[in-house]
Length: 235
Image (cartoon, rainbow, N blue to C red; front, side, top):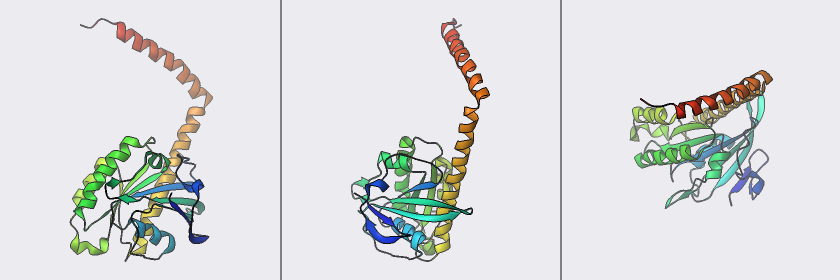
């Protein structure tokens, strides 16, 4: 069972099933972020740095944790839930319901570890096969940017990855650059809000009586067209 941290109220972990992923709510006020990556990339350090401004270098990669924090975005208060997934030696432990729960998924790699970058393709393929909402925000996060002299992944490779999987891209340093970490998380939250507004507009548009009437007329016509085409002789 994951630990739950209410960081704005109490930094101590609380065992609380109500905070665990149980399906997507996507209400635009609560933003659910799933953080994935192999052991040692600094994903837990990124999350704690964002929420507390502190850098802590050592974490148990086999412990899954849910963090909750209130933030201000565009002058409005939002509640951010961050699920830091555990890493298992025999493979990643992303669950299907976690993917459904997430409004955004951060895929973190270390610029000093090529295998951590290559593993994200497996993560991304699995996530895309399981996510049910096309509006889920995907973000590629290159952590440990302060170690650029040790980098073994080129910008071109990161750009190609983002183009292939339609990801946002951020370079961060959990240890040296708090602003880079904040920018990544808040930019992701902002994109989630943008997507939610688009979803609301589409929903309202589809609820318009005139649109509903047109769809009710078109659907039977399309059905007849398909039926006619299936019966039409081929040359």
